[in-house]
Length: 201
Image (cartoon, rainbow, N blue to C red; front, side, top):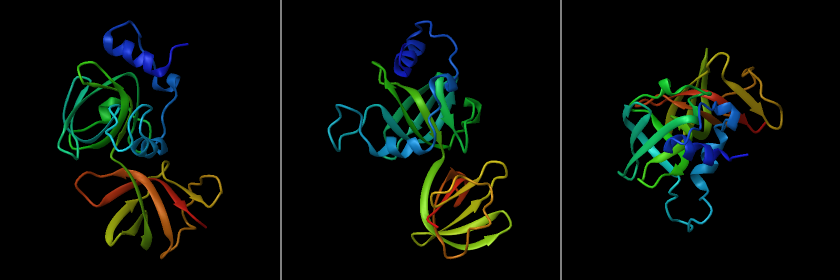
């Protein structure tokens, strides 16, 4: 059986990979984004840029290709193919990508320098802080002295308390509690839509 990377290379090079649903290859969840960002690929020297990883903000979208400006001011061309897994608060289609979105992407670097994406995480954030206010469907988080307004998304947001399974009941969260929030940033704001709140108690 061919690996996900073989399928991606074949799809980009026109090798007849056909339509492959992301779920058939195994969707890559949001937790993987941060492991991806901090762990180098095999053969990459510690501290050296990982050629199979890219981050930045989308400048333009043409067909199935993203032009992304990295935080180091380097441009990346990222191709989304049939096997690419996309996340934006949850699994989404390519039509949900927008200019201005931030992203992390991992994939296979092609000979022309383009990255054939295995997974793309759009606007993903992973922040820690303490809750300063809870009101209706929002909570305010103090993150290193900066306020972040976090929105509960019905049917999507869950809380994980200690070792308990995920629950849609966020009523156990309290003001002054320290939490970690995985979610989707609303570009150019201090607001985040909540995917998961991790609470130590």
